Length: 252
Ligand code: HEC
Image 1 (cartoon, rainbow, N blue to C red):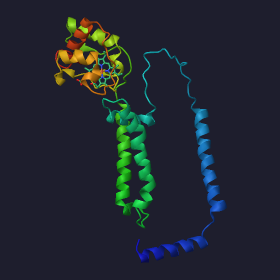
Image 2 (cartoon, rainbow, N blue to C red):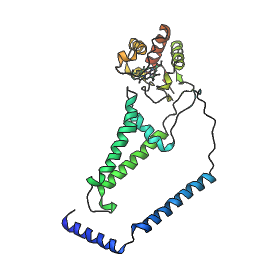
Image 3 (cartoon, helix red, strand yellow):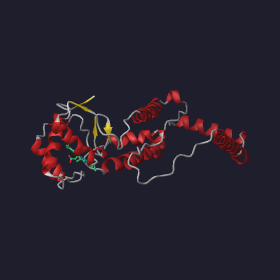
Image 4 (spheres, rainbow, N blue to C red):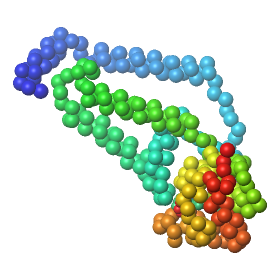
């Protein structure tokens, strides 16, 4: 703000103060009126549109598909952006670092943007930031909403399975791999990578067996459990199965 603007502003302010209405009781009164109205609408909606109470919680259920409410889809999607070999990274980034950067930005915004303008059409940068944030939230919400269901279920449906493939798939299904991995849209979106086209990685059967036995030996810091208790033949068929994913064994 330059001097002339500042003077003009202070004059305007003094005039408004002299002529205007005091904060108490006018502004307080209006605030309360709106708050009571909003609360009334919420109560009315709760009475008119009754919410059904679902089944009681069953802690032993294995087919429960955890999904957030729609207004958390953006956060749900954010977790996936930071997906990596470490299970904690997405959680820390998505629920702590990114939201806190945004809150700090909100706090320092008045110090960053000190222009005298109040009209939104004369504040292109602020307007652009607001539009980008809202568009990003809308995009992430949309992506989160159409994300595949995940969770345990039937297991992936694959074409081209031969005997070894069938055996490998059975080991895959029996060992809860789908709780961290996805094949052809079935399974969890994380923390493990999508295995639909695992063949493209060109790991080789030896690597797969070694990795299944002790993942951390092949991917330092891996959070995947070690499957060294599985019989050799199971590891073998599982490794062949993994090496065929996207090549001989294809998801529809
Ligand atoms: C607790 C979650 C979890 C479970 C359960 C799990 N994995 Fe993993 N898996 C991961 C993570 C995280 C990675 C990435 C780090 C790594 O490569 O070890 C990974 C990596 C992999 C990879 C390497 C992909 C590549 O080429 O980079 C394969 C193959 C794999 N898992 C197969 C399996 C199979 C088969 C099972 C079941 C026997 C299984 N996983 C169970 C979390 C899991």
